[in-house]
Image 1 (spheres, one colour):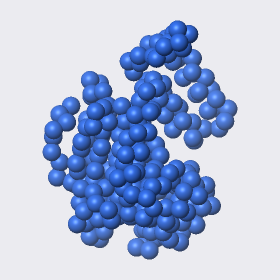
Image 2 (image 1 turned 180 degrees about the horizontal axis):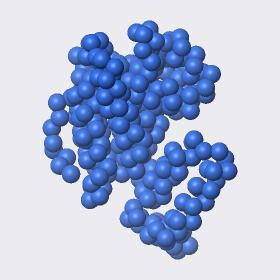
Image 3 (image 1 turned 180 degrees about the vertical axis):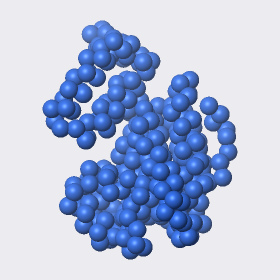
Image 4 (image 1 turned 90 degrees about the vertical axis):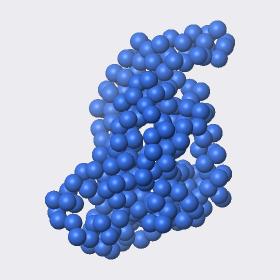
Length: 267
């Protein structure tokens, strides 16, 4: 993959083997339009399909201090037909699925507003870190809309059905402390710099483990969320037994017996 490729609405940086995607429309509070979503889809597809690109983790954040992603670009949406809206919704959902299914762990680092599509993008990551000034919400009903990039589905899985209904039906915003209590956010930080530093530290600690095993654990947990416990256990059993054929499993167990640090290859 060409990591030096430039984008109009995004910045992508590789720090060691960890990627940082920054939504870069600060004058529009990093709002999502078709161009942003198309560039995200292109970048994530490239990252996911390049077997030779040994990225070990990914951070998604927004440029500046005011907003992670303030929502979808309402000016672009105002005159859309139902067909246009279907295409936009499909594109937004494709991006969230790419975040959800890319093998490496993805941390959303939310600074400021994460509303509408911004909240939906954050929820498609593996977990969310937030600054104390972060604000989350799905305010679409205030515009005569509903969430279209997965909010009606993912929010309930994260905070429970009734909490999700209350948030989506009312359109109210929640600050970082309430989002933390709800389980939408896993950690909060006083500053964006502190959050980004801790997110990178977390990714590095995860990368010390087997990348192959982490990827399988992510896959099993994401797929199992919609299964019954019996179905989920069957899925886990199949993946648990299958991983015994991996190089990382043999290296990890051998290293433990030999009392040395493992040298994982991610396969």
